[in-house]
Structures are given as structure tokens and as C-alpha cells.
Image (cartoon, rainbow over all chains, first blue to last red; front, top):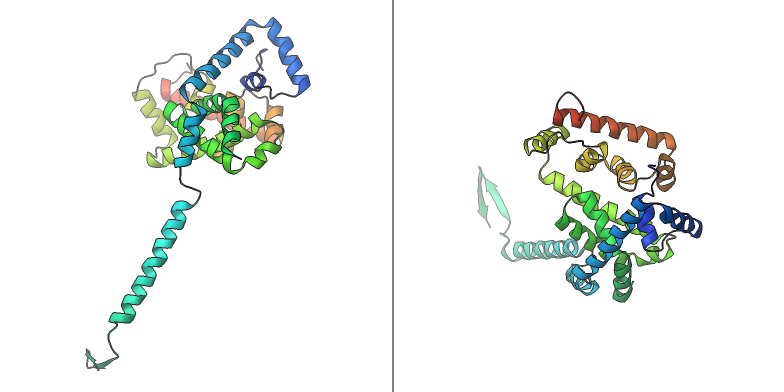
Amino acid sequence: MTGHLSWLNLERFTVDDLPADARESTRGHLEVCDECRRRLDELERERESHLRRFSPESLIARIRQKPRPFFILRLAIGLGALGLVAAALTLVVFAPGDRVRLKGTAVAI
Amino acid sequence: MTEDEVAQAYRQYGFLVLRRCRRILRDQAAGEDALQEVFVRLMRYGRAFEKAGSKVLWLYRVADRCCFDLLARRSSRAEAPLGEAAEDQRAAGGGAQAIEDRDVVLRFLAHFDDRLKKVAVLHYLDEMTQEEIAEATGWSRQTIFKKLAVLREQATALKVRLWGGSEP
């Protein structure tokens, strides 16, 4: 695009994610291009500083703390269902008896 | 995937994922949140990762999705139309330095729809050509051409709004 390797290309190169032919042409370009070598060095430095700052152990610990998928939704549905059952029971226990309407008033029989 | 396998993938690719998330979100803390989310998804959908031809491209697709979700949540919390956001940006300073389409588009990424976001990231962040974007997305070259034209138009309009009548 600009005569230099794209960032994506360099990023994949640093972690050996390119197919063999692309890897070879990238290596060839890096031998003659100072700017792309500078970018590659920048990526390598980022990799080192990243692992110093964010260890895999701390990531795993944070993942463990995260709720499972749909946990909150399941919890909400469960609590909602419990509420409905409680409301139904309340109605059954405390339901008023049959009513007979007499001229706009209600009288329990 | 087991925790050990996720940790191994993180050792190898974590810095690239964080780098991408940070560049899309333009924020270190938000980038770290997205990084964590990517590896949570890796733990859940690890089988697809193992089968992927390119691990980096697989992780980047997931990272893009996580970042777009975060951008959508962020913009729904403080919803501002593109024009107003540009005014805010101008009010915050920034000056008329030689700014490129790339900087403007990435700064206002949250305001584009998901397809435009995807093309913007592939073109301006990954520096892919139209052919490469068409291949990566499965969309026609014509579609990519049109979307890039829309992005350039938006960038020009934003630059005019930010820095006055003439482009910086």
C-alpha cells in the first residue's frame, strides 16, 4: 500500500502466523527496509512489556471471577419465577371469598 | 479450552490483541477490558480457534466484535450525533494539525454502522488493500469500494467541521 509491509503483516510475522510464502517475502523485505524493521522492533518491545504488565495468571484469575454466560439472565428468570409462585400462593391463602354485588357495593358471603 | 491452553494462547498472542483493542477503542483501560473479553470467549469457543488457519485473524475477528460492542455501549451512554461529536472534539482542542482520514475515521468509529466499522478497521488499522478486504470479508470489491468512499466522504466532512472551510 505504501511500499512498506502492513501492520497486519508484521503482527502476523512476529508470532509466526503467516503462510510459508508470505513469511519468506516478509523476511526478504525486512532485510532491505529500515522502516519496517523499526516497526517490527516496536512490536517486539510491546510483546515484552505486555507480559511484564499482564501475566497469564492474572488473566486467568480475572476470567474465573467473571460470571458464566447467561448467569445473570438465568438468575433473573429464576427469581422472577419464584416471585410469581409466591404471589400465587399469597392469592390462594388470602383470597377473599365469593362476592355478591348489591347496587355497586361488594359483600362477602 | 483448558485454562492452561488459554494461558498459552495469551502468552503468544495477548499483546497483539491488546494492541488492536487499544487502537480501536483509543483507550488503554477499555482496551484491557476488551482483551479480557476476547480470552473469555476463547475459553468458551476454543474449538473454533484450534481449527482456524490463522490464529491471529481469528482472534482479531473476536477482538473487533468485542470492541464494536464496547463502542456501541459507550455511544449509547453518551449518544451524540456525528456532527455534535465533531463539535465537542473541536471544543476540546486538537488544532489544525495535518490530520489524516485515518485518524478522523478511527476517532469517530463509534458513529458508523458495524459494516463500515469493519471496513474502516481493515483498511485504516490493518492497512489492507480493497482486494484483501474483499477476500477477508467475503463482500464484493464494489461493496468495499463504496464503503471506503463513504468513509472518505465522512472524514472530509468531519475535517471541514472540525477545522473550518479548507481541509487541513
